[in-house]
Length: 122
Image (cartoon, helix red, strand yellow):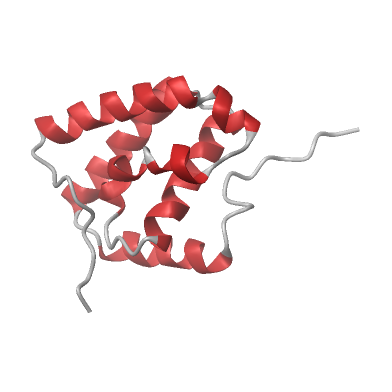
């Protein structure tokens, strides 16, 4: 029997997926690069396995549900995982989440990125 293929965004709502794609389309190249770098740093800690990719998907869903208009805000939302997710798997990952917060925060400071999400006031 073959194992079912894991899809990190399978549990993400269709509305959130659409918002993610729409935001990506209108982002500048520099912001896209910052987003990619933050995700890569996070995955270097969480692992590029299904679990690590699933955490990235959760962060992205939290980001768009909160109204952020830029995926480069990714690093701002990592800490919200511990507040929102209460399952045992996330509890086991708390130390890795804290480590990712520290590493990504250092990246954001180095590149003088905003510490507050970019949201529309309308």
